[in-house]
Length: 530
Image 1: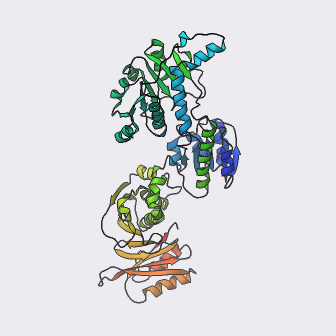
Image 2: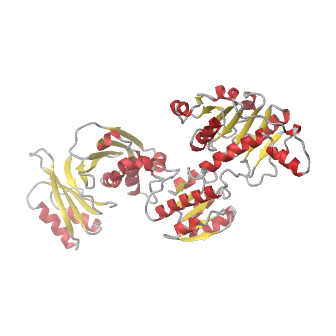
Image 3: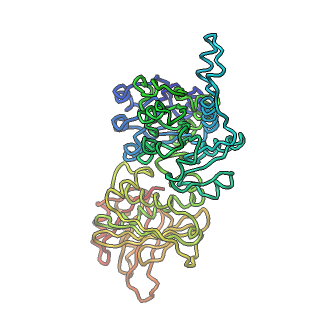
């Protein structure tokens, strides 16, 4: 396997990845250059300079994972990566301290006119009165986005004697108030409260141009703005106009709409107090080391067959969600595989029911495993990343419920698969924490260990059926590893099923002679992932 590392990432990343793959460190390249070489690589690791476009992703026929050594992933086409089944990971915590400190540094530099005063002093001038600043003490800092970086900025601001007000629809009022801040429920009530405003949100359709001439008009006159998050959240033309008019007293900007080509950036020619830095938020030795190590470890883990800890396009498999259900992932996938391979017709809907130990936990990771099992049995290139996307595109309805019904198992998950032709119900369970079993096939209660090669043979319950089926299998030179014969609970029922585990694939050449045995109907070969 080969991994491409670009954008001047700390070499410690290579030492980690080299344990499982060959690593090439190359300089930042254009889209055209990357498209040419990316087919040779199984993983790509970048910072913000490289734009990982759909063209690059589609050319990466062997790509399994793309790692962004930093927090934001807006330079990576997530939709294209997800559809191709490529995991995208970042390092959400690696540069928290660096970005938080840079935010505070910019705010102080702007408030105290540090940059122009330093330039003036180096020119031999002594313009003390010209560069009179303002204090942060007792001023109100408005924070948009109260995640790891935003909340740490809030902590430091409080320590400096500032008041903080917070807008973040994904953060609870209780959390903000516990920190010592005031929670604001809507932006219209937020703007006019702040002496300083800092943004700590990703760039997406909801945040692009969040700060523009209309929202600036709702702010206090003399407000000061800081952006160490992503370029484009603040409209640069509107900010320039507001600074030149004196309505906005100052701005401290670390990120831009067009990086690194900022020669046309309107803010370069502002008349007022503007502090500009070249995307230095994560540029500390410690942060660069931290994010490189974090993402390299994830790439190593994924290429070794494991899972990523910070996959941005498979949030259902985050460690906190996966941990309570990780022992059930394989049996969930097998349950989906078995259900679809016993069915005919296009899948219309999937009903998932969890009980036992699973009744009180989030089963979203198991839903993804079931989808992967169902879809990968009929389509190529399906994995945990793109299974939900493919299901949605195909219009498959997914309904999940939890049941408090008593069960004899540690935990059980039941899949009811509805196609355009029939309905198939399969239950998978853990008898104990480490013993997976298929415990129901339609109306038959079973206890069958999932195996790679299995034959499911419905038949009339009468003498010599087992011998006739076994004879055909033996004649095909296929070894029988185990056999279970299951009847319905009704002792008068004449129908049974044989579940036979074999040591190799059993195709039509085996199924056809079995199907013509008197009393056998519709035998199926099932191939499970074990």
